[in-house]
Length: 229
Picture (cartoon, helix red, strand yellow):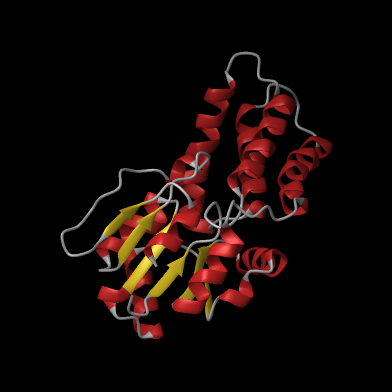
């Protein structure tokens, strides 16, 4: 195969991420202990707050902590104390304490891909937090470039392609999120590989939207990339 430009997502593509946010929410819901709303309804309130705030403030565990605090202010059925708010923030802060858990076959697949293609790690979120994950993962050595952006949109992909000199027919975006990885990359003219994760964040979900001008692969495991590249 001709040498390709492979752009690879990080969170929930290379390593576990959303499961830690889900655990923090479960601890928050236990602490809130709402008498009338179900956990699903509490989650709906948090999701609505996150959908608004993400566009303004971005992503990451610190932003998540602030969203939990806003949710607590909206839903708490008891007087709110400073100690309560500190506890709510602590649920989010614990996310940073979790070790990096690589998804199956990631490291051996990156060894294979890096020998044959040009790899770019492309992730969104807080720059310091995301870079710390890259450093702790030990995977940075496989990538010729690491890009950390506030949001993954069509224009961001086009700018990345221009800056890195990517040739569109030979460039692929690989990730688990239809909203951030697959659909905007396809609209930008890149090919895409969709590798679903069973715990993808709800705000990253949408229908995959193929385009006639680009190729789309749907794989079940990261390790399957060795069969295609």
